[in-house]
Image (cartoon, rainbow, N blue to C red; front, side, top):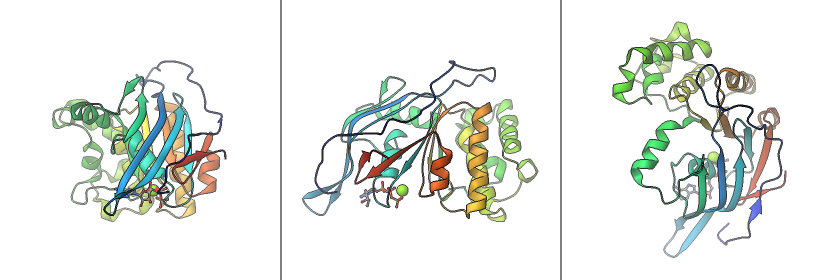
Length: 253
Ligand SMILES: Nc1ncnc2c1ncn2[C@@H]1O[C@H](COP(=O)(O)OP(=O)(O)OP(=O)(O)O)[C@@H](O)[C@H]1O
Ligand SMILES: [Mg+2]
């Protein structure tokens, strides 16, 4: 993976096309994400660079549900970090709803990042905050203090089946419950794009399945574009489209 390779295009999937620009709940259908010739490398020793994402072209249609699969180290997380602007690409183009992220100002990337929902394999809940306060974390202080914010967080906790645990500390919850809180937290910003890096990776297969079912079910009321990474073939099979990553490139599944 240290050498550069040729451009590879993702296999044609069955991404669901957007059917409308919004719904009754005020949620838009989802973001349109387009990556073209995206390259991301990291320093490797003194002179070399490790190419983690190697000239990737990838399109995520509004409202689609895509799974990234591939061996450990193939570049799935890095690709998700580029889509979520946690990392910046070396070159190429990452456009979200037509807005270019590569070369965007830090202020713009910060604003963009706040609009994206993230779910991580290790949940990343703040241990000293209650479940309810964890869900409110992504909101800026002035928004979190608005009257509607707490109600919204409670609605989301209800949607993930944890309404009764809003005062609990994360450590007192099971892994599956903690991931449900993390999903509620990701949705509090009303994201048009949800990025989930191995959202079931730390869960046993039954709990993982229930968390996945929850995520899929939430799309009915919270339309959004979802891209996740997974090592679990059952999780990938539940998605509309699978993009396989090998050595930083997309390959036909
Ligand atoms: N911040 C970083 N600094 C240096 N190298 C990195 C960094 N992040 C990722 N890499 C390297 O980039 C490559 C791709 O890593 P990445 O985490 O994207 O893989 P992955 O497909 O998500 O793997 P896994 O399935 O184990 O999560 C790996 O070789 C990794 O070591
Ligand atoms: Mg990873």
